[in-house]
Every structure is written in C-alpha cells, then in structure tokens.
Image (cartoon, rainbow, N blue to C red; front, side):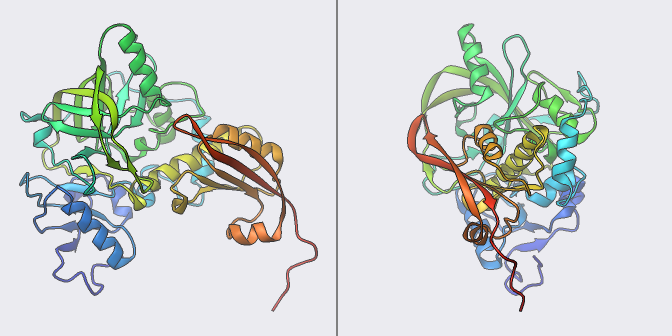
Length: 421
C-alpha cells in the first residue's frame, strides 16, 4: 500500500514516519503504517472508515486514528497484529518461522522475571473505562467492546497462569461483561475461584510485545504457564509484574474481578463474520485502569484480516509443532483466512496418511476440513488430481452436533506425468 496512490490525497490518511513516533515498538516498521487525522466518533465511525479504506485500496492497513471525538487527546490503533508484525516481533521470517517456533517450543524456557524488570510508565486513569477510547465496532453491537485485550488469570493457589482473548462489553466506568468460553482455561480457573466463594482476579493488558499475543491461544502443546511458553518463543525472559501478572511493556492494563453473577452481554459482530447473539456472561468489576501517556489504544476490528490473521497464525504454528513433535515430516501448515482462520487446514507433506490426518483432527477439534498432501498451493486442483482416503467425525458447535468433520489424505498420485506446453 502506498499513500501516493490516487484516493489518499485529502482523505485524512497519511503515512507515518516511523513506529517509534507513534509510541509503537519497532516491529511495526515491518508494515506500511498510517495515521488518520480527521475527527471521528468511536461509535462505529472509526471501524466503518477502516472498512472503507480497505475496500478502496484492496487491503486492510494498520492505522492509528488520532482524533477520537468522545476523548480528545487519545488515539486508537486498528489492525494491530498483521502477519508481518508478528513475524518481526518473533525475529523470524515467513519461510522459516514454523521450524523456528517448533524448535523454540521444544527448548527449555527462560524463567519469567518475578517482578518488573524495568520502569513502568503507566498512569492511573481516574475515570476507569470512561477514560479509554473503546470502540463500538459494528452497528448491531450492544455497545463498545474491548477486543484486543489479553486476559490473564490463575488458579486460587497462584498456579496455572493463563492468557486468552476474551470479548468484553463495557457497560459503565467500572463494570463490564466478560465472555469466558467454557472450553478455555480461563473459564476453568474462574470455576475454581468461585468454588472458594471468591470472585476471580483478572488482569487485561494491551499494547505489549505483539509476540506475546500468539500465546493467547486455546490450546498449547507444551507444559508450564503461558508466560513460560511466551519466553520460549521469544528466547528471553519476560519482565512481568502484578497479580495476575502482566508484561512490563504493556501500555494499557485493566484490573478487576470476575464475579459469579452474570448479566446479558451482546449481540456482538464476531471475527468469523456473524453476530453472536445476546447471552448471559459474567460481570467484570473494574478496580483499576492504567495507561501509558500517548500510547494508542489497540483494537481488533471484527471480521476481515484483523482477528483472523492472529487466529490462523496461532493455529498454524501449534499444529505444525504438534505434528513434527510426533515425528511426521511436515513441510508447512496453512489455515485459510477465507475459511475464517480456523475451519480449514492445509498440511503439506510428501507422506500423507490416514494416521497423520487422524492426529491432526484430534488435536484441532474446531477444524471442519483438514487436507494433507504433497502440493496444496492450489487445493482444488490437488483434490481433482490425487486420490484420497477420508476420516470423518461429528462436528460440535456449542455442545451440539452440526454436521460432520472430514479429513482427507491425498495418498494416490495421478498416473503418468505432467504435460508440457
């Protein structure tokens, strides 16, 4: 993307000189970074403008909106986790990141620092959530939502530190609704706290090293808490502090308690392209909000690339590490963003087999289709050319069977040889 292209002049969109000038880490220099300086409301207008830019120019850029009508002086970072930023944060490349990340996961973890290793520049916000430029992303959303916050929880004894993305609907300066999917470790931690008769402490951080976000996944093929896994991926100890602990470099931190009581939350325009209906979700009581002065508030605009890129990136490295750890000769794993980042997996290998497909289906129960074969650059052509064996099983969504899942191993190569022209 280039700001000199027709349509940018006078649009409010300008190329940023550098990531540092916007209070962002150096990994953001890996993408074309823009600012948008016209005043916009955080209620739908920012997200709609980003969608208009994407439609006009063929890609979703990473943009800092610098003039939010409801909170002058604040800014919002949209599309905070493009693939190039994640790769740069992990100090790797597209060509070698799967092998590199699998190797790091299998290595001993440097111990996280027990206390913050450097100065914390965040300041307390007296208005709590009212002092943050939290967006309403879609017209049908029930209100503003925190979408890029990484929730940190633990069990009552302090073990099992876990990170996860949980959608959070803001309903007041000190109250929100947080949806903890029953399949997550965060939900299990919550049940353990509530069994003691106490609410669960939670920290929600934003703006930390983007590499840490790739750990906030639903399933990890490694032992230890999530910060230990993050330190493996980064190859260095992490400075963390607080209870539950958050990274020292987080620009925004929301602290509070997840109550046993629930209230209506939603609807919400999910990343996968549909509205999640209103449901009962746990009440989040907010006790503290901290922010680094001048740092933009990150938000993942639902749909498109913003949430799905992170989802597919997580799924790819986790599946690759799992299958390589079992001894399968895997060249690559790709989750299609067009298939919502998690429902279709392509596993490239010269030795496809029913056993490999079975292991992949057991590891990733969310995928509806898994295809393993030697050449999946064009999956449709590969399916038309190769013979295959199948594995099937029920597909569960929200505890109910909705059709079947299928795995294909392209084990029978075509007869003859390719035609030359």
